[in-house]
Image 1 (cartoon, rainbow, N blue to C red):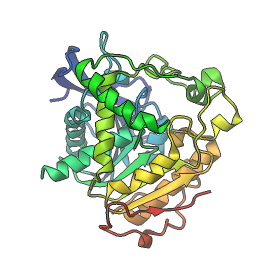
Image 2 (image 1 turned 90 degrees about the vertical axis):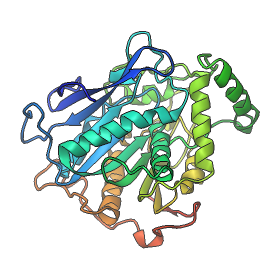
Image 3 (image 1 turned 120 degrees about the vertical axis):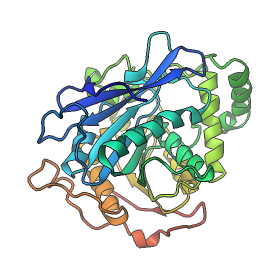
Length: 377
């Protein structure tokens, strides 16, 4: 069950939050909760208690990545301008859901997130009756396809119809030298099973945080306690869970819906901020994203976005405007009843639909590794 009522969210006017109590933490860190956030329709200002934002039969559920939470107001406003009800989920021990004494983002199995994802989807369906487009960033972009594939394999239909899947720089493999993906992964598997709370030594850098945060000349203002510039410590148990997720992906999934993967055209790995680090993915290896995207199964389109950061929709204004156009064109071409900008909305010109990315080059049920990659400059 969810908490009693929606309440004002930390994002301020136009946003509300709802707690989803999850009981005792299976990893022994006390009571846990997840938090569902929704954007209220602009024309209503504030909704009555229990009222749902109209979505015209369409909704989005967004899931964040590691060292992250939902703060991207502009993403919600983009979808609202197209008449789509927008929701985001802060997973257990993340962002709004983090409680004192808990290890940020710690989980020993990515499947534990199935509970809050299922309950969030059920709540959205109860509120709107809408088809739901799932959208995941980074680690969220790994969690969502694994969840969809598990439901398909278990013959457990989702509590709301899922229309499609958008992955924004999904974490599909472990970046770095090959040894990390071989002997390093074996070591993490043993350590994560026997001493899951052990901190994995990593060379944390402020490069990506500096490219984002207004405190370092970036464009975005967010809570640095929930998204620190150098990231949260990585635990062996959590990294083991991620590597198990990677292995399952690499064997091939079937998410059962059309998918769009957005990524930067290049990665730059450095500890020194520079102009190059403000126009590239400094977190993940984009070649790995391209390599493994075909493992999602189904109708899959991959679009590299020139100049994009790790979070494509936090890139420079012109770059993210282009990414929004790509997203909208794909949705208009592939998804049933996709929304278009409302007349006079702020996004009407920026996201006006154009030529769709060649859906005819994809197939409804291709072989696992077949997918379409579009060039987007």
